[in-house]
Length: 200
Length: 252
Image (cartoon, rainbow over all chains, first blue to last red; front, side, top):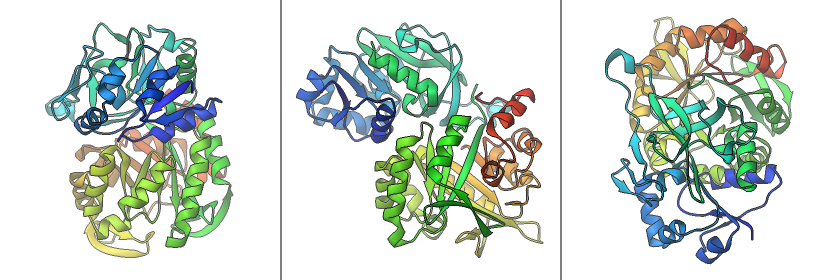
């Protein structure tokens, strides 16, 4: 099996599977570490809460498996946050693949913060695109975000988004990629990003 | 910059899209999957599917429909109608829904909102509120598709819902629904500016200027409409171009 989606206690796994089907690619959804290790490419999706997701990964020894993968890996949303060093969400130590820290969105105090909603829900533009993951994607393409926590900007940032402050919309280090937005729900732009990941 | 969202709503009855005026006089508006895919292609930011005939025996049909939608739609979508348990939601999410909306069942059992947000996250739980302004000037919550009046005030219930974990409010003004006379700006503004979650305004959108008003004056995070899109009175690309020209952040 070439493409594997890691199955764990987080949502939106079906959405990723269907998005891949729409671009003509089949994938295996599994938590079997041998199948994950032998896959050509791995997607690590997720909508959920950091500490319970990390606990699940550890219990199933998936934490070590994911950290040691050599093939291209794409973490999505919570998946990307779990690949960072630490998340403020219930003070969770994460996988530490990216050194970036995951922080909670905090609307500015006073009048400036009025009307700023957390979590961020909706379409936001991504810019400073610096990766083959974004081939053929124009600067300021719109992607769909749903998140209350964000990865700070850092040396691994390959795309930036701005909500309350600029933050990492995507990260890249060696064979590991992460997207804070949901390519599987980001219309044509998201489809292009998934295609780009598949041709890495 | 985070965009304002345009959300076509597809009311589903017996597997078809329908649309009425002030919640009655239903007209057929086509196949929901085809319509949804068309809207996604035209630049809709999200879709809402409301099963207005949801009953126990129809739940399986709804799951199958959700599964078909999920296979064809590349933008987020919300499913509502007759959802009253964690199991209902689990089944819909497994079939590819991104969010679910609860209405009557949540009002009768507010604990449901807490249970759902704990299990699936707040981002997944949309609290739909049908509200009508009465002669005393107050906005009251209505249940059962607008058929049953309650004594609860719209703002109080919305706030309680958010405190319990609802991640978005879908606010429908029954006074405005189907009239094409504009959205309910005052109650929408009150919720949108005073609650810490996004508010989707629904009911009354008839012209492109109505959408400008609901975003600028009422500070809505998203606007939902049905018949103007189904009956091709306003095309989504044209609407988004208009909003863009008015300096409203939209995804083009």
